[in-house]
Length: 168
Image (cartoon, rainbow, N blue to C red):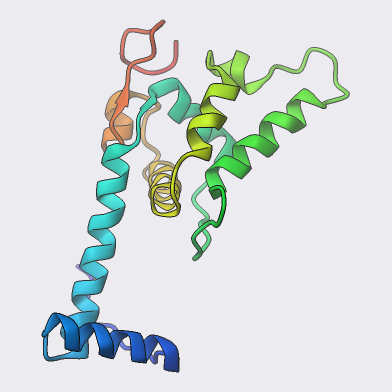
């Protein structure tokens, strides 16, 4: 079990922000407020993840594109990190000089443009939540199934052409 204790130094602007939040939320303690802020962030990620709507094949495609557990400690700006990774990967395959190289759309039975359009519409917190879920999915070595994705909190729908167990 993890110790649960942390210690950190905050930059001036973050310390002022936390002090202001402590005063307005009347927690009386920056330590308590910091715990509450972390709990709210965790809740925000979980809430955004519950709102994401993907099929199991779309989720598996994104896991294929992201290919691992490494995450950035940043939020995306205009479009998300998952969107940019998917768009780049899709384009690289389409521009490939190797004849017969399969696209992600063909490999996973998905509409790449529809997936990119959906990902482009995710806000920064939803994008980070999805990136985190993909990272945890890889870390757990979870199965590419509805159940495997549920292990990391992502509810995915069975793809239209499968039996609900993942890969067609």
